[in-house]
Image 1 (cartoon, one colour):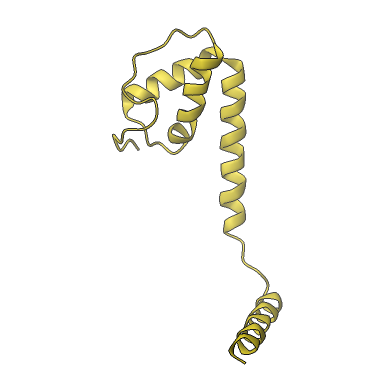
Image 2 (cartoon, rainbow, N blue to C red):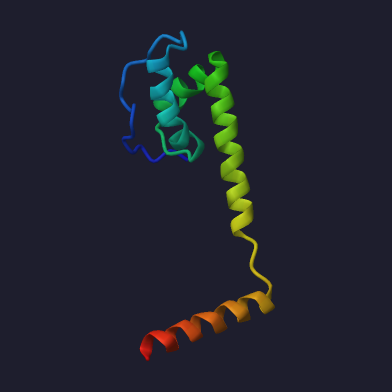
Length: 100
């Protein structure tokens, strides 16, 4: 889903796909927006073309996408009730000590 928001690198002319450090730094900034589908169609095409040609950036993209998926999956888990009750009890004890 593209939102058309302007992000780092948005609207910049397409750079040659030679994998220079400066060029890759620009694409690495845009990878997060690319993963989150926050680039317009033109920027998506430019980033995808770069990833198709640049192994180091593709590996960084794969790593970022994997980390994002693991974090998303982990955030759906909830603590067991016994743990939640112990934490809430400790919070209440701290509140009482602070109030005294």
